[in-house]
Amino acid sequence: MAILGTINPLLTVGWNGDAGWRLQEYVQRGGYKALRRIIEEKIPAAQVIDEVKKSGLRGRGGAGFPTGLKWSFMPKGEGEKYIVCNTDEGEPGTFKDRDILRNNPHAVIEGMVIAGYAVGAARGYNYIHGEIWDLYKRFEEALDEARAAGFVGKNILGSGFDFELNAHHGYGAYVCGEESALLESIEGKKGQPRFKPPFPAAVGLYNKPTTINNTETFSAVPFVLNMGADAYLAIGKQNNAGTKLFSVSGHVNRPGNYEIPLGTPFAALLELAGGVRGGRKLKAVIPGGSSAPVLPAEIIMDCTLDYDAISKAGSMLGSGAVIVMDETTCMVRALERLSYFYHEESCGQCTPCREGTRWLYEIVHRIEHGKGRPGDVDLLRGLTTNIMGRTICALGDAASMPVQGFLKHYRDEFEYHIEHGKCLVPPEVQRAGSTFFKATV
Amino acid sequence: MLTTESIQKIDREIAKYPADQKQSAVMAALAIAQEELGWLPSEAIESVADYLGIPPMAAYEVASFYNMYDLKPVGRHKLTVCTNLPCMLSGGVDAAEYLKKKLGIGFNETTPDGRFTLKEGECMGACGDAPVMLVNNRHMCASMLPEQIDKLLEELK
Ligand SMILES: Cc1cc2nc3c(=O)[nH]c(=O)nc-3n(C[C@H](O)[C@H](O)[C@H](O)COP(=O)(O)O)c2cc1C
Ligand code: FES
Image 1 (cartoon, chains in turn green, blue):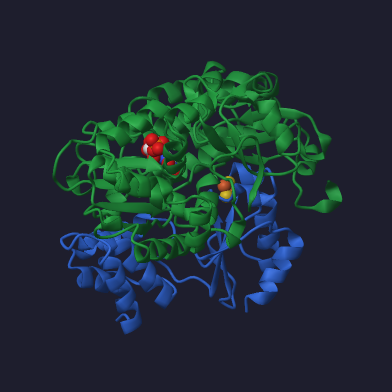
Image 2 (cartoon, protein in one colour; image 1 turned 135 degrees about the vertical axis):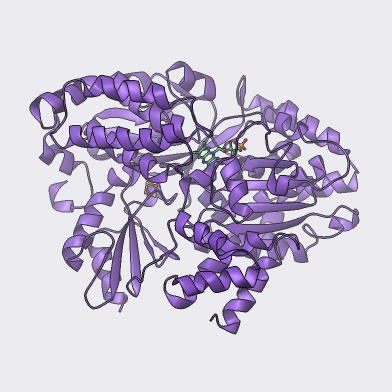
């Protein structure tokens, strides 16, 4: 899928689906200019980090951590260090990194090589989600092109700087999106998260200092450096610099990826996405991937899409995955499916997560199937507080936050299910929400 | 037990990692073995472990942890349908139900003629294209409405 709509685009300019991803086209669009300038002008590594810091670029993988600051945590001086890119995109609702690899893989490569230069790493890996085999192959092809052109490998552009880059193909485990599980996975082990601290900047891949960023973050780096920190900072709003890709899924007329400046009103994104499908009424939106608490229509319609506004509204911008639900959606059924996902994907290492996600799913499941018991809503709430903050990684929190959000705003639907053994939204109305069977829509 | 072609592919994977980190290639090596054999019998897992010089248990742990490895035989075509919430809102569950009816099997079952295995998938990072299905771990099919599903099943002999 191509990019479906933009406001003041930056990352997606010139994207042309399968026809514009090769090295030649990327270079025509100004690609590898940032790397070339760094090498030719011998810009010191510290200055590159400072520029990224000043630009206000924040990580696009979910947590929004300032990128330049993360790079500055790497130890200075010689020694084995690594750059790792996280393309294990598995947070339900998120499909932007896949489009970046499809349309502009060289921007990711250029961003990673620059990061390697900045932190003094000589090797990198891009960890690519198992289900997107064709784009893993494409990334490898792009790497071959970059190697042949001297942008990757030994003595890059005659500078004496070496950076070898490879792709690692995942094989189906959501938890490997968590950075330390991802590192374990590259090491050829089960994807079980590590205790933190130490953070990857101190002890990362093969126990060496490692910088790990999301695909979109790396792909933004060349643009940031080409336009300069000040110009990048001027896009978006304070504390929320730049543009971001938003993946819009669910009940809209045009599901797809959209690039807009941070701070754009949600209503404008909804309009770009063609509005709610079938002209129906908006019910709720999960604004930042399935782990983010759901927000009712009246709240999200007043929000701008940036880290601060969404957090003030009680949710998270996360990965920028906007899941739109209209009035045909049963909130109990929606949460049941999400809870099943976290139960399935818990790696089983921590008891509160392994057992807690199972309980969450079983209770929501029985409520959805007319077997809910009085007190179940409070039981669910209690479970979430017993999981959160008590696990090695944030998967436990990611499983708990949706439960809390759904109960906070839609408690009446859960209570109705428990009391009446059926849904407040009649089955035929729910069925009409799906476009699968045209006859009923 | 692996063919020379598979071994060559595995060697290419090993070369991606530092010389003392051969274990890093285990995921790719298992995937290559599975592609060759259709699934991963224990002997295949053991020969991968052997080739990489790691304990068989280390390879088993990996094979059983990641969802896309098949530790039991599957049909010629493994169809994995995403039913996670974003897809569900656009017909993912309906597509799965449609397939169950058409094939006469449930999730994790194989048709008696050995042609199809049906699996329930989690988010494939393709939610905008829902309903989506993955064929044999490799080929992603988008916008799978009844007509497209019928056509795909026709094609997959
Ligand atoms: C359960 C879980 C799943 C995650 N999945 C992803 C993912 O698919 N992609 C991603 O970039 N970050 C994911 N993250 C966040 C990463 O741990 C990490 O913060 C991120 O890759 C850092 O990159 P950034 O600073 O550029 O955002 C996940 C975190 C958790 C706890
Ligand atoms: S939810 Fe189905 S691909 Fe994301």
